[in-house]
Length: 139
Image (cartoon, rainbow, N blue to C red; front, top):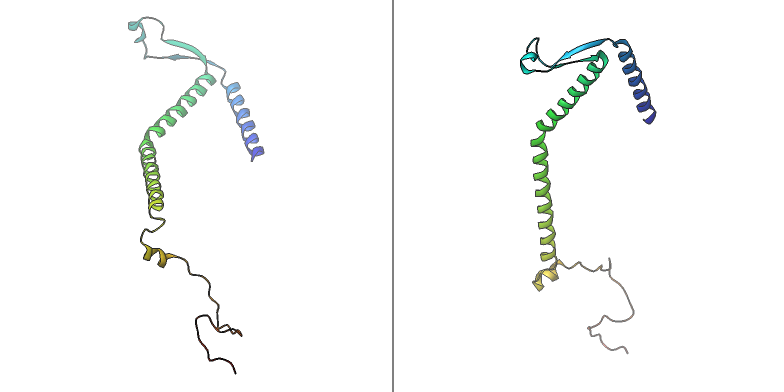
């Protein structure tokens, strides 16, 4: 990816240099229509190479597009900020509820919620009688 980016930048630089060399002629850039600048006083025109006018115009167009999109998407950023704050508030509320309700205060509910211990799958035979039972004495 880095190589592709460097190749793109090199081609762009070659293209810009070619445009600059092809458009070296000097042009007069005026701020106002003809003869209107004389009413304001001073010289409202400047002589610049054509490639400089092209590059500055392109840069100003990119800047205007950037500002336009930033302003156009402001409502999206505002809504994302509001939703992010709402998510943070709800996560805090869930954490608070987990802390308060993690251990039930009712003993019956606590007994019912307690995990059951593993019991043997089938009957267990042993030589000893089960505890708490009475068997006839052996003869």
